[in-house]
Length: 188
Length: 83
Figure (spheres, helix red, strand yellow):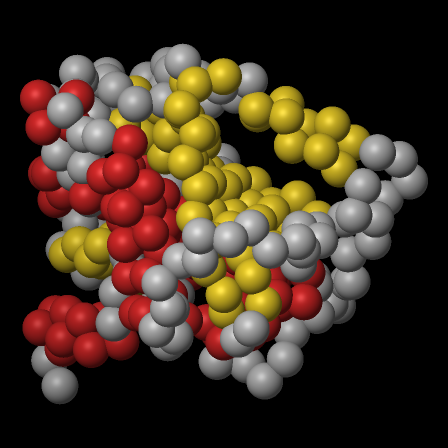
């Protein structure tokens, strides 16, 4: 049964924090020189490239260049994937529930999807692939970091509060005329 | 359970999964006599060489990095099962 997400009874504050890999997981290695030299511009650029790659291959959509403007939109659907290891932080994807459902539907080859589990899983998977693609693009991160399983949050009344307090990168794209943003928050 | 009770031709599995990850799944699968020869293709965002080596050493038959095209899946399946 496809359930439509609702706003929930109360405002929820979600504190985001990526920590070192769990016990038993692969030990993190230090980022190689190439990654340490990565600039602000290259992280943002690779985040955009990773997003374009995922949308082109998995969603079947060629995204135009990211916009430099920050259009106002109600981001009531968000997916997050933690990165832990030589680089610690969080990759997140934010958009409206309508846009999230459209992305999920197109990826799954469906005409339309509700906001239920299929849409949540697919949207989380898109975020997971963007994080994976980003990681693969930065020298030294492929083996030096682990990704968490995706978390999906929806509803109009929540605030994402990052504990990372480090560098923040974000890119805004448009999918079928609807804006969505991809962000990378790194631990300070 | 599914692998124990059914005759499966091929398994496609993610690596990053809740409860049990794909590497542990392959490890347990290979310990089941009736399932130890079922080809397993790992499909994952983890692009590192270490993951590939570990997956293959545990008995995975192939490895595809996400995002992937349908052609990549088809090619890998054909290479394992034939056309």
